[in-house]
Image 1 (cartoon, one colour):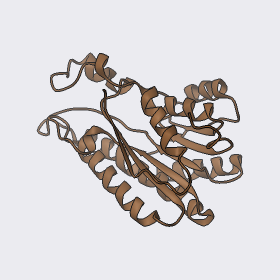
Image 2: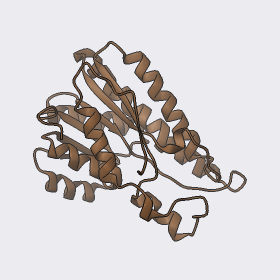
Image 3: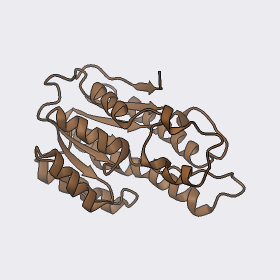
Image 4: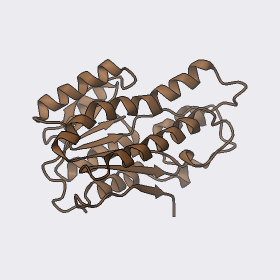
Length: 241
C-alpha cells in the first residue's frame, strides 16, 4: 500500500499490546518500519515483538507517568540510534457512567491516560523532531472528539481536549518539517468494549458486529504516514460504510 515510503523508518506506538495499537504495529512493521511497542503489558509486548521481528522493540511503560515516558523515549532513541520518525499516540481507556454517578478516580484516570499521557509523549519526542526537521505525530482521536453522548462525561472531554492539543501542535509545527495528524475513527471493535458489554451498558452504543476493525484504522495510519514529506493530512475521519 505504501510502497517503499516507510521502509527503514522507526515508530513508537502506545497502547501497542492490543486493539488499534497492536494492529498499527503490525501494519507499520509490514511496511518495513522498526516499531517500539509501548504499553504496561510487558509479556504481551514481548510476544508481539517476537512476532513482528525486523528489530521491533518491546518497551513496557506506564504512559501516565511522566518520568517513565521520558525514560522509555530515551531507551527507544538509544536502541534505534535516533528518535522515532513516527509517533502513534493511541493508548486510551473508555468507561461510561452518568456524571452524577462518576467517581473522581474514573474521571482523573481517563484524563491522565487519554489526554495527559499523549502530552507527555509529545513533549518527550518533539525536540528531536524539531532539531532534525522531520517527524510525524499521529494522534488517535474518536468520534467522541466532536460528538457528545450520554454517560460519556470523562471520555469525550478527554478526546475533545486531545483534538484541541493536536490542532495547537499542528499550528506550532507547520513549516518545521514535523507533521501532525489526527485520525478520528468511529466505533472500533477492540477489547476496550469488553467490560462495557459484559456489564450491559449498551443502550447508547452500537453493536460490535457493525463496528470497524482495528486493521482498518491501522491502514489509515499507514496511509497518512506514507504521504510525501511535503504533505500533511491534518485530520482523517473514519466511519463504517
